[in-house]
View 1 (tube, rainbow, N blue to C red):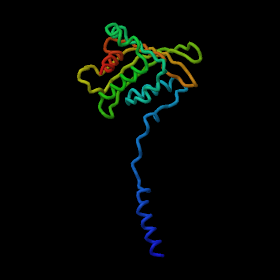
View 2: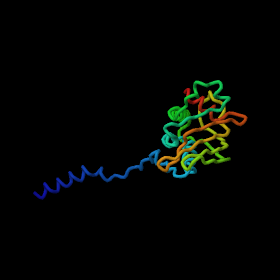
View 3: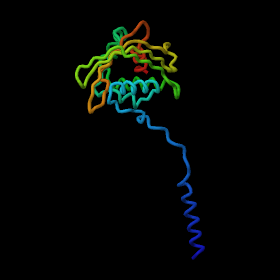
Length: 187
């Protein structure tokens, strides 16, 4: 009986030996980089970090379901059908395409400088930024990697969180964000 107990214990120990192995920690969930945007500046930080790290989950969360993008007039003029109904779905598709055409662990550089802010009501405001974006894409059919311009964001607050409801883009003498979106939405 004693021998049977010892064999049973050994068998149990062998079966459970894998239960206590040390494993590599899992990568943090992409959404864990999201900070609840209870202030407009937190939303801007979420947006900037998502663009820099090409984090689609966080990027997508920055926009309202009814989001609209208005492209730079020069870019939109030649592509009216492309930009006339640009919603959060197109925004996500463009960003996903940009990520797929970027090196693994690539980082973009984004510098946003707020130039003005106007509150409409306690739950909506507009912010104006000048931006400089340097992308790390590997698509050889698009020469520029640097995009500059100004953007007007209309933010709304729902359930105490700020989100981007509207984005208007304008160029400053060279390629702008609208040009980047035009290129990567078609890919």
